[in-house]
Length: 287
Ligand code: RIB
Image (tube, rainbow, N blue to C red):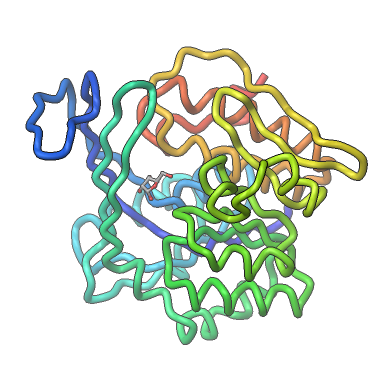
């Protein structure tokens, strides 16, 4: 089985569901509250593991109850958690509001900020054994850059999901194999029409666009893989589901087009349920 190594954030998500988003300065009654495991890194790791991949997670949690339960949760999905370090900083937390078929997220990074270049150097043999490395931008950017440089030198495949957006994505795009911004992230990155931007990086730049599906440019033209029609319950982690499933499909030898279709189908299942990891499909749920 191919090895996927995810290096990224591990959070606990505190999720309030409301009829609408509050305005600045406004107090609203919510409808529901739930606590889920999250973090873009952990979410992508769980998605890949639920779809049957051999996954190792590298990241940091606090030496606290959230950290213990976040690791236990990853263990439950048979993810290798031996490379996760417990730090003095508390486990990362995300405050999430779900309303209007969308979400708003505030991340308090905590221990995720401790994923340092020194820590990665100690884990370099794990990275060197990977068939594919998955990265997002919820850990320090100099660490992401160092990993991208290393993988580029060693010809290890990398998917970089540039979320939350930072301009470092522009600097790194030539060295990664796939970059997967959403529409807003792509606009921040290129400040031009998305068709033109995608044409600059054929078969590499893959834009997720919610209900419009996914866009990328192949060798010849712009391709749209339309989204399935589903009743949206919670879009949190839809992008993570796409990325996790994309990684699984690519490492199992599917073409880029087939892998994007697979990722898209997985994300469509995920948005029909509450939570990020809880909503991610197992293989038999993807039709
Ligand atoms: O992509 C969704 C994730 O973003 C949430 O799980 C939250 O923890 C934030 O990292």
